[in-house]
Length: 318
Image (cartoon, rainbow, N blue to C red):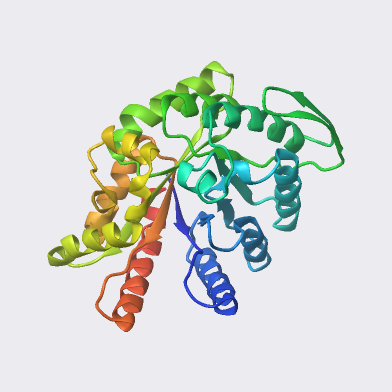
């Protein structure tokens, strides 16, 4: 299993956020992480633009998006942007995409959120053809009628990962993508539901074994502080639980909320939780550093303690 870290969506003014983003990615590469994942927060920076900036400060680490909402742009436009970034970062982009949630697409953007799985399949047909260029992109399906030439192509090929939680989306991801990017999925949900379904779909389609990227919060703390870490995860990350998609995924596992998903405790406890995810079939673990404390200084110190320990575990989980 490869170990990665989530980077981005930092609070503060724009100039400070960019500076912090670049400092964090330089640390992640120097610390030996395999990959870094940039979330696309609805009210924050464009994650592909940030990946391009991170690529200019690094030379080895894979840079992924987690994830680009599909409804916000035409697949040709996304392919053009992703291929441009892929060239700029020297072939290190992992393009994570997904149909997002009703409260983002419908409520925030005012775009219909009907048949998201069917739309994703139609979208991927166009996107995959465009990424396989150069050449003609001639795709006609229920959602798109595209006849668009392109001179661009991904060299090396760019992995496309789809946020897939339910059976239909996992089928689509296995057939048309290189894997899935997850949030709110614990070990049992992955081992019993996600890994078998997406792997079978990929095998039936004649594709390579899919990547399974699981995101989890992580907090280094004393045993007496584990409950506090879980409570903080539920306070600052609980908005994800308002989605029916995430609720259904929680029902397939043992975790009841994002606090239960958190790997909290000492170094041994964190490593043990990491290994459980590897045993469940996770190929890539994406760590969301979760600091605890009452003051800003305490939170900063907690974050740095956690990230130092996590970086020491990179070799342990490979």
